[in-house]
Amino acid sequence: MIPRDTTPIIVANNLRKVFPAPRGAHKAEPIVAVDDVSFELHPDECLAIVGESGSGKTTVARMLVGLETLTGGELAVNGESRAKGVMRLSDRRRWAREVQYVFQDPYSSLNGRQRIVDTISSSVSLHAEGTGRSAGNAKKTAQDILQSVGLGPTFWQKFPHQLSGGQRQRVAIARALAANPSVIVLDEAVAALDVSIQAQILNLLSDIKKHRRVSYLFISHDLAVVNQISDRMIVMENGRVVDAGVTSDILANPVQPYTRALRAAVPRPGWKPVRRERLAS
Ligand SMILES: Nc1ncnc2c1ncn2[C@@H]1O[C@H](COP(=O)(O)OP(=O)(O)OP(=O)(O)O)[C@@H](O)[C@H]1O
Ligand SMILES: [Mg+2]
Image (tube, rainbow, N blue to C red; front, top):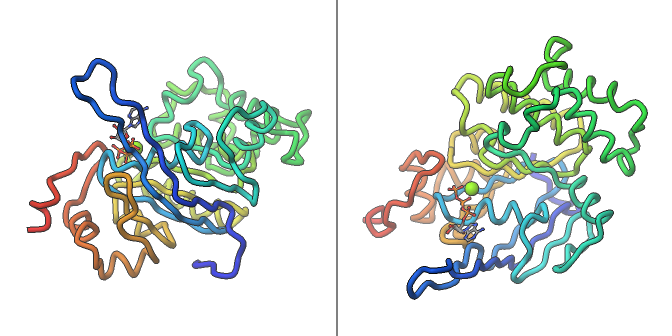
């Protein structure tokens, strides 16, 4: 679906992020991780961000969820500006409720000593105010959410280490859903999974989108996956957007040399840039 006349959930204008020069390095310069990046994300839409390793995808995502401050530019979520500076806890919580993040490796982001039903019900309780869900029914809500991501009662009392990679990623998605967000950022969320499990998680993400109003910002190296799941895409190189448009158009007929090179390269997570000159030749 390619929405046109909707009010965007996220409006990012000229985002810029500069990290200080690494300490101790001789003649080190500040790192411009994100430079003049603009995009919109509409309701019910899946926008993909692709680009080689180090191109700035995760930094953009971290700015969206408030894990990185903006060096420059403007960011608005649901019409509310996400200004620089210190936020109150209540603002930060509201922000987190609207945009949830699913990482590549859910193992490190899940509490290993907590049963998964408790992880999800904590998230339900944390975000109860504002989602319209009752904190008193948090456990029941958590069970329903786990069920909706394909984890039935046999899983509820398990710990993360007792689950497979695909099941853990389902827990991470359930935890994101517990906040009832407008947007879920999926940062290489299927990259570490076997192809068959990857397909199951992609189906789950499509199912979720059929049943609730949620948009995805889908970061991936894998253009086949991006082609399957996203409506529009932006292509990043060295912190900048070098290509953007409807995914099927861009991938069917890539015009930009960098996008063509990406398509030819079948990149993987952690894939390091091959010199562009070489790719272009
Ligand atoms: N906290 C940080 N401090 C300094 N430099 C950083 C920091 N985070 C990211 N960078 C640098 O910013 C640039 C963009 O990194 P980022 O992680 O956003 O790329 P990416 O596109 O997500 O890469 P990958 O595909 O490998 O995940 C890189 O040069 C990286 O080294
Ligand atoms: Mg990244």
